[in-house]
Amino acid sequence: MNVPHPAQWALSLLPQALAQRLPLLVIASFLMGGLVATWTSYNLFERRAALHSAETSGGELQQIIQAAHFVDTQQDTPPYLWSKTTGFAADSDAHTVPLILTLGAVRYRAAVVFDQRPKRPDLLRAGAVSQSASDRLGELSKGISRQDGKATLVLFLRDGEALTITAPDLWRDRLGETTVALIGIAAFIGVIMAILPLALNLAAPFQTLTSKNREPLTSLASSEAQMARDHIVRLKERFAIEQDKRVRGLAAISHDLRTPVTRLRLRTELLPEDITRDKFTADLDEISSIVDGALDLLSIRHQAETSHRFSLAALLESLVDDYRDTGRDVSFHWPEALDLPSVPSIFGHSGHVTIRASGESMMRGQPDKLRRALSNLIDNGLKYGGEVTVSIASPKADLLQVEVRDHGPGIAADRLESVLMPFVRGHGHGAGDGVGLGLSITHEIAELHGGELTLEDAKPGLRAILRVKRGLS
Image (cartoon, rainbow, N blue to C red; front, side, top):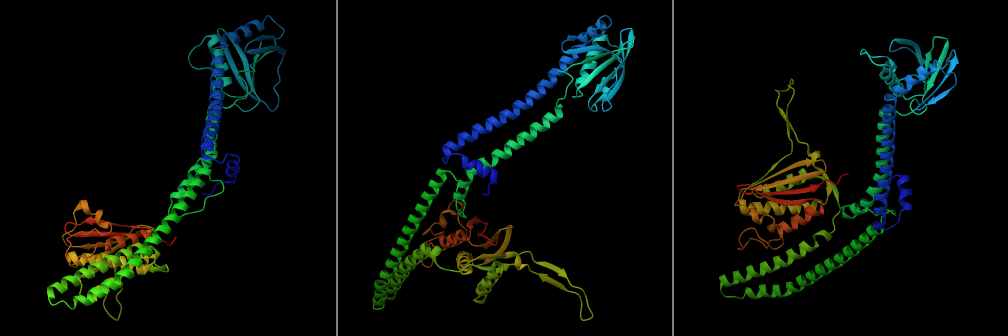
């Protein structure tokens, strides 16, 4: 798995053991998520608290306006600061919203001066419903707070003086709810993007170990993953040694048995009775088949064969033609044949052209082994069904599927899996029934090509499905 460079640097700082990495990752995720949630909650709560405080502070504003007619010095009436000046001139870069404030029976010319363009100036206007002086001022203060910018409320008194009111805690620059929510979501996504490579790296080595395509572990893999890899390597080496011993031992047994079997064959020729001689010969043939078949099953993966790029459909057609040449009832269905009308010309009438897309069945593998596996399936079908139909399809982009169907007695559903085991025969044990290794060898060849062999009851008959990977990518 490719890990970004910042994540590689972060992983290099972590302990090597997975038992230590996992708690640290959980703690880091909790802390980062908690910081994002705390920051988002604080900003949303602070803004809503300011709006509530502004809405309920209309009485304080009313007291300030009433006192301004009698007091000339600057006063503090929390949460507001106010002062009186002779006239008022806003800065050239300020944004002014003029208002007419009707407070009971008195009307004032007023203005709200912002240091930046207000978001919703319409919230500063009075509604259609008649309000008391404190309610109107509370609504105005809340409307100013909702602009999320520094503001000054100016009331022009009758004697030419101006009353300026500020609220540093309420009317100030702050992030809006939408902005806070977007920043919170972006920060949460950022936390996920920062933690995700680290989290995936914890599982990546184990995914590598369990995948069929063995890739080397990176230097950032945990010590537990490296220990598991070393253990798997040792087990594979031990299994390969044991498998080689079994193959060599069986090969030696097969070689040693051939001499006494040959002597027994010669002696059977001296038997006077034909029936007894035939029985001896059949038993000797079965012994030879068992030994050779078992040796073949154990050594099929180690038999040297170069992988080639070829068309599985073409291989099937060639194989089926060989069977048909010997008079066997085997038919092959090409995949996705297109029947197109041809264009008439001066040389003849229009006809039909059949296009067979053999390129759709291209794959890379060992054709000799696959030919043998398919022959085993066709031979079984001919032995028990008499008539065999072969077809090919591509259910997935990197998968080819060959279906071999016969019309024989089939196999009971509870035995479909067991017949894939070595020395298990699907039907009787009479002469010519084999030793029960053909399907096992076919299954081994399918697994060698990244696929599998499955059997299904076709009612009537048996459907053998061989799946292999294309291996082109």
